[in-house]
View 1 (cartoon, rainbow, N blue to C red):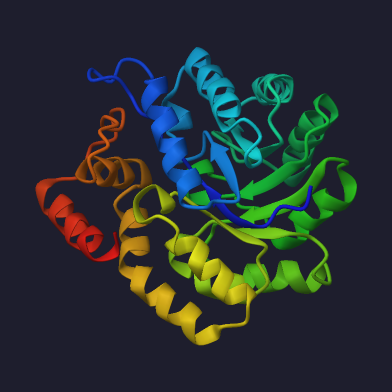
View 2: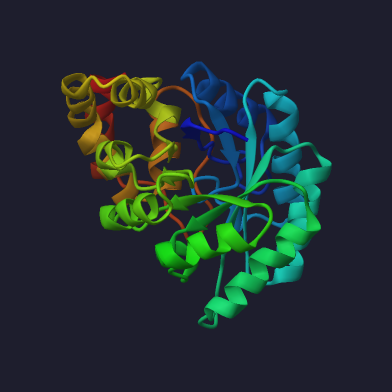
Length: 292
């Protein structure tokens, strides 16, 4: 699959008591992303609170997302599980429901060796025909994979075809590009370094920002790809404070609060996560008043 552009991340909306997933509201969030001209939808990532969902809820969100998107853009399903068996089961399910790709993170309690991580990815690859995006996000998953090791997995594991790098270290992206001679697609997962990443050769940008600021991320991507550096710089710095804020304040909390401010109530994040405090909401509102 030749994937590029903006990969939009929906939050997972809840009912008023936060006890169940609201599929109707999820459909609304997906529609907001599609209206923002995203090139793919990635359900069940960090912004989607995948780690806080029961297995039945996880499957419900995955299935509904595929059905609601209805082939308008590719659907990527995020998988980050402690055990290989559960990751394999989720990958099989993503395949069964018609997802286009899986984004696989090695989630850890014990520190994992490279041999264990390789085995984890290999087992998932053997269980499905879907392409796998190797996702390096040590801040949330507790595992940090080097560019060299991720490229080794791309070379050795059949369905491992691309990389999402979220450490915020631009040198890692340069290294992925240089070591693979630009042949292995990689994606930026760090919002506030989007301009640097795209200029470093990233095939796209994975972000929940379009939930709140429409097609501005897509405009930035297009400006970089069209070689319009001045416009790209203008668009990036227009968004920069907002992009940094939603990361430092917590994606689920900030995006859900932002949607509420824009008239789309999707509930609060699940505890122990907390919604934004009044000062943070005020700051977010001020940014949205300018951007939206």
